[in-house]
Amino acid sequence: MWGFQGVNAPVGKIIGFIFLSAGVIRLARFNVLKEAHVVPSNVFMGLPIPLGALAICSVILIYPKPLLTFSHSMIFALYVILVSILMVSNIRYRTMKKIKSENNLIILLFLAIVIAFSINFPKYTIPALTLLYIISPIFFFIFYKFHTPKIPAPPVSNEEPTDKTPGNEAP
Image 1 (tube, rainbow, N blue to C red):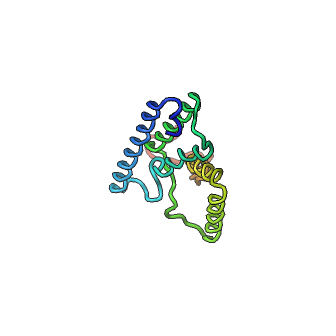
Image 2: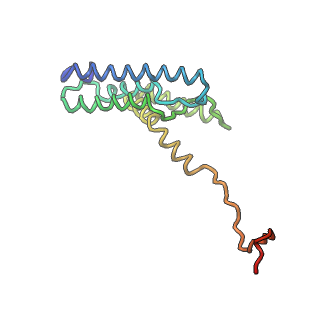
Image 3: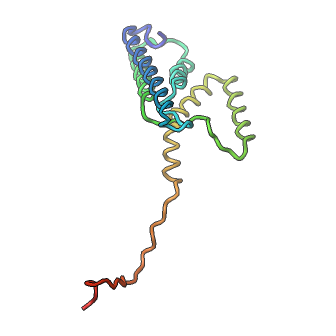
């Protein structure tokens, strides 16, 4: 209703149904993958539904007044479709499970700061954290691309082969 009430309500119903359908598909796939033990427990395949909903609500936090122009409604529609596609995609999102840290006090302090900012400045903190989580697979891809240990190639020797098998002798 917020994004389409003033411009094109039927388009809003279609976009809402697309988001709902993506959510249903996402939940069904999550249950199947969980039962089959195909994906590790510290990874979500596709954007989790709560984060998808938070991505939509974040726009409302930033722009509390309903959208009244056709162009703004279409941009919002494209955004909702993008979030829907991310929910059913094969992009892997990290969970908070199995975080190994040598210093848990730093993580607790960081979480306390994030919670304090979220309570005092929700209009800015929640959209920023949501966006950071949505694009986090890019950061993990870059990190692992440049920080994976390379297996060294075997040393190349300049010596001639000393193969004494029949037929390989020099004339």
